[in-house]
Amino acid sequence: MGSGKPAHSALEERAAAASTRDGIAATGMTSWTAGPGRPLRGTLDIPGDKSVSHRAIMLASLADGTSRIDGFLEGEDARATERIFRQLGVSIEVPQAGSRIVHGVGIDGLCPSAAALDCGNAGTAMRLLAGLLAGQTFDSLLVGDASLSKRPMHRVTVPLSRMGARIDTGDGGVPPLQVRGGRPLQGIEYTADIASAQVKSALLLAGLFAKGTTTVIEPQPTRDYTERMLAAFDWPITFSPGRASVPGGHRLRATDVHVPADFSSAAFFIVAATLVPGSELRLRRVGMNPRRTGLLHVLRLMGADLTVETSQEQGGEPVADLVVRHAPLQGIEVPVEHVADMIDEFPALFIAAACARGVTRVRGAAELRVKESDRIATVAAGLRNLGIRVDEAPDGARIHGGRLQGGRIDSHGDHRVAMAFAVAAQCARDVVLIDDVANVATSFPGFVELGQAAGFGLT
Image 1 (cartoon, rainbow, N blue to C red):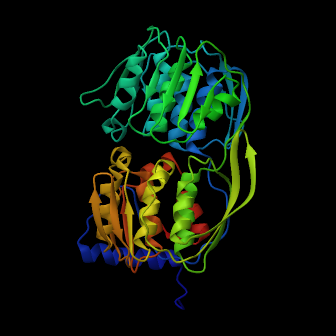
Image 2: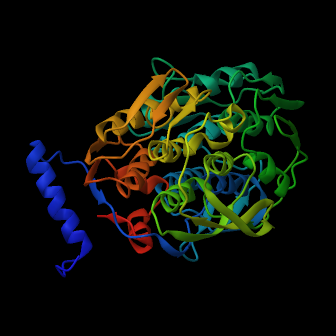
Image 3: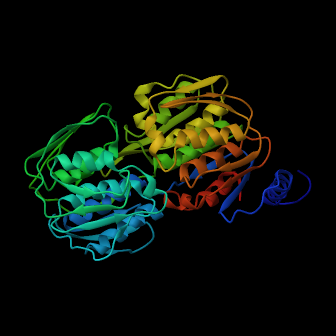
């Protein structure tokens, strides 16, 4: 404490010592060095919601008239969607960072692209575009990076084929996707086997171009961003938790969209402030879509101190300030009814569970096996490296709370896993080295800088 050296310098020295001790050679991957910082304090502005940013670009492009999007996420995933719609003939202005002015071409105004449409790492973009492009008069080729090219797409392409779409995949049902245009689509009633907002949204977007009505019935309600935004763009959609219907043959009307702060990105700071003694953070204008905030309910059951303030509605989406204070956590059986409402927040929850007293059990989360990585396996392996016992199951895990040690983590290119272990390092006994973190830029540009400002030990 009295050495006068900057905290990050000390952290770097410990990282070098850990690398020497473990015989770690340079891998060439972008890595982080993380360890305990200081209590997390202050007021933070989290970047815009990725899910809303994707959908805002898509619907504004198909609308009649000009829409303005404020709070747009300047991450690689959302920018990939923006680039694709430029390729499809949409004029999009950038008056300043976080803002887009989209000159819509109308429901029937997209143009074919001679080049492949590169989704990068954005699984949401690829799955939603599969539905949207299935209703066009032209063919399209959807490609992605190495990670996205391993992710299953049959869950989208199979139900779309029932509507009359033809989408050819790579071997094993993975990208690239060759979407064959010029095929008439027919509205269907589809009862989904899995709770997936991406599958639901792909079908609803295809339904805009279909004859008749397309209805999706879910086994559990999932986030309803697509439904809310279709309503905001004046499409006559009807929806309730677990069910949504769109009639074909209408038009979208341009509107302005205010993108709230991304709850999934806020989740890392919510968990960090809960775990680090002496912390108190205010997170401003966070999206509070009830189909997205299952983590709040689960953390409160574990004993977290979370206050929701200044609630309001913005562009059809509820937003609020969240105030988070440190509180000791107790392991629980995570209620299955909250699982679908926190599917992207499980890496952060697993860290909270690892630092809680007792055992936390997660069931009904098989969807985690097919995200950017197998998130159950990847997070479990990382926690074991830090000295935590984790018993895996096909659809979840049992996490035995304990004291985190130092170690090295392979995030397998999964942005949420990388950020989750940056949170874990704030509670560890020693330095945590986190490899393969470049994809954090897909969802949370500026994570390191914001974390450092809040109090993270992270370089």
